[in-house]
Length: 180
Image (cartoon, rainbow, N blue to C red; front, side):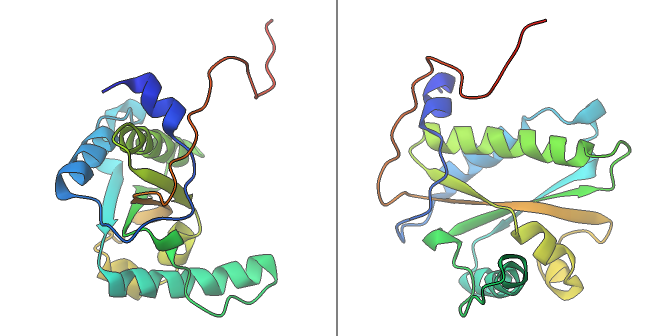
């Protein structure tokens, strides 16, 4: 794996083809997530749920659309379609011993998976609303096999991009920084 290539190719894809991610590529993505650092090595506080079932994606998308309509003040008439991606991965965590550490842990898992996907020519995008939508629907959470003591943090979608994103150049900082 060329890590710099994965980093520079990773971007948020919002148009996917209908081609599903292969089982072999999905396994690489999941193993990359599993290799992420988790606070104090407490991997038992995290859970990764892979959703590939089309009916379940529609069910999750329906709940997400309802929530997104409330937040954005614009009614979404159809279920959120995950930009046409065939795979949703939900990152969940037990309650954090330190405020926010669950999102830090989830973020390291997510970034590892998205960089691995990009290096393999697979697109990805955060589907943040998936976490809260799933978490507040006990029946949906149960149907997904997410442990009752876990909080669904967010989702990530994976698939093959309709158009390959441009590779980023690592030449100058976009994020404000300072040296002390």
